[in-house]
Length: 145
Image 1 (tube, rainbow, N blue to C red):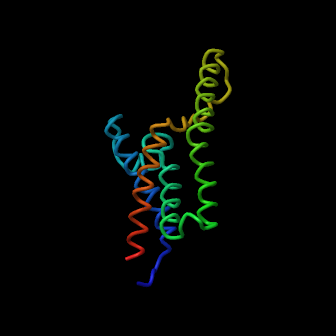
Image 2 (image 1 turned 90 degrees about the horizontal axis):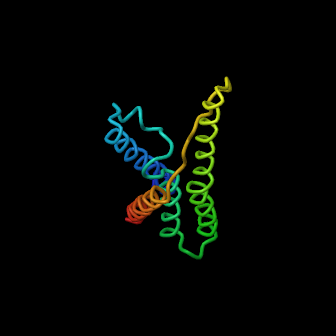
Image 3 (image 1 turned 30 degrees about the horizontal axis):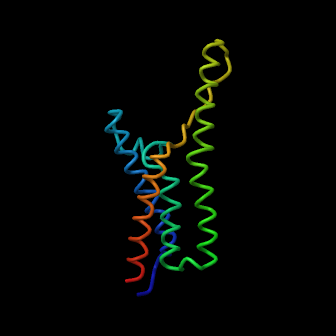
């Protein structure tokens, strides 16, 4: 069957969209916010869209190109960086943002408050990674049929 769209691009889009939709639904249910659309682009939260997106493309490459391909090696290195960043670097910068906000309030400073994005907990990253693997398997199997 002739493909119209690259399965790699489909994996990226579906991985991101699925995770953002789930995240928006959870945000509405937990915080009683109205409207999925308003919550569609929130950062942080369950599941990690960073993890879902990278693992969707990683899995698609694994299935379609094999574990010995150069592309899979590149995808693996990129996935490790993204997953580490999601749980360590972004989380740490979010915690620093919270501390800075508290200091600004405590000092009654006129410094504008920073935007604080908390990054992800390990559970959010794992959930996103599992979602991404499932999306990648589905995309790869559909493209092979």
